[in-house]
Length: 504
Image (cartoon, rainbow, N blue to C red; front, side):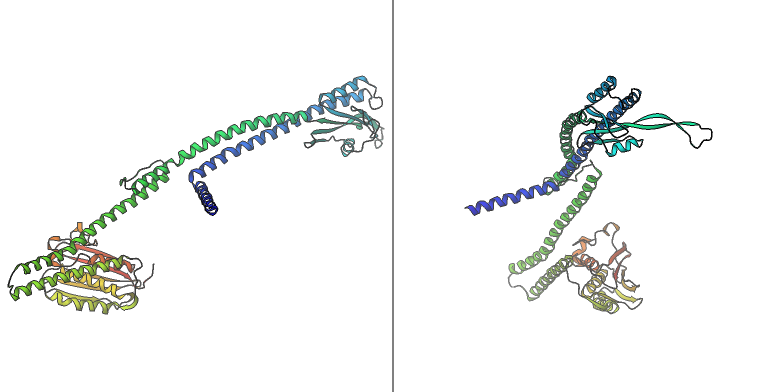
């Protein structure tokens, strides 16, 4: 029991996996995922850009404000000689105000690197040798933003203009120079910036979630709308497949659906044609096979209904029955040949064949039939031809064409066979001076059981399969067959077949 349960669970898991794989492979799911990605990625980028830009802007503004205050204080420090006397209440008040306003710490450093004032009151009298302070005494202030620890550190040199004698000048002229006599080091907290960034980030996150939800919903509806025409095509094809409709479908929503529908409609038309052809073929086969049997049945019944039948009449009826049996046998033989031709896997026994000799042999075999109607059969060879072909099928082609030319000829007519070749193909022309084929029938002569003159088909004989078999044999050799005909003047069949057979 436990094994059955486990097998059932495994089967269900496999089905679930297959369902998921099928869902992921669907066009709707791919469009949905693509729309979600295209819609949501910009929101993440925008959110990061906005927050990052705010941080950079806020730090820049805060730095600029503090530097302005530092320059003002630096001027006041010189005015009040604060570096030598830190008792000035005005300067101390300004320093405290700067420290409180920006939640920071202010250090005033003299030219001996001694801290003369610390708003935190922790390092006064100590020596400071930080890199930023050393650079400041070189005349350049430094600004550093530490986003990890959350503070901005700035230094500003305290400069004083002094008069210095020019030792190189003979007149003893004096020049004024800027001398760094101290430095201001300010460290301010960025907690307010971080707090504002967090608020901004939270609001952006809420807005982003709303946008993502809207994008997901819109992507779902858009993906369904975009694949809806393809669903229409699928439904229409399923209706045709289920037999509920056989009409051509039309889904003009997209160029792609138009192409798909056009291809399907062409396929549907081809299937209808094949189905009609199949039904007609079955009907014709049934008729053709039934006719000789009916004739034999009538003849046999006639013999059975009579008593003391004369030997001559009995013999005549038996000869008619034998002819009908031969006719039935020929129909069955031709049908079997046609079925073999229809199979793409039909074996081709390719050998090197002397086409001149083969054609002469076919003409020699059929001339006795032609002489009964005083029809002259001539063979003209332009040049010797040898080709790699299936001898049996080429014999079938030549026999059918020449025999048809004799059958559908006039009394005292002619049949002319011409053989020629170039470096790629050999050509056989079978020309007669017979009754010809109407122009409207030229496109149907290769159809099975088709006869141009149905009223005389029994007199002429045959099964109506000869040209269908001939065309199949030609196509199996990768060749072509063409026909030209003028009613009451004659018909010319032209067969062109490659000298070297190339398997497909």
